[in-house]
Image 1 (cartoon, rainbow, N blue to C red):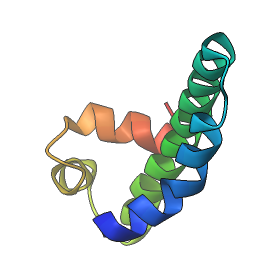
Image 2: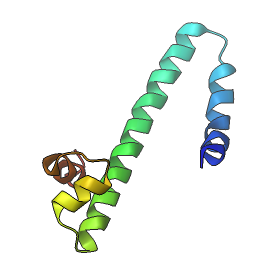
Image 3: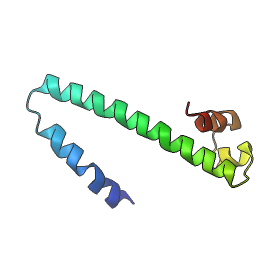
Image 4: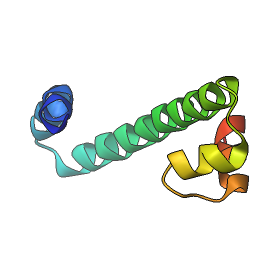
Length: 80
């Protein structure tokens, strides 16, 4: 899994390293961070909703999602 993630992030890494102006690179890093946060939120929502669709209770979803509180699992399900 780590190798595939490394491969997936390699183009972004190369893109960022190619920006020679450090102010521009910093801004690009922050933009990438925001995009990744949106992507993460969307996937966590999909996972939480998928687990619920399988019939799991929020407490079970919470345990599967790393032992977060059931309230947090519910928030993930809402896209928060």
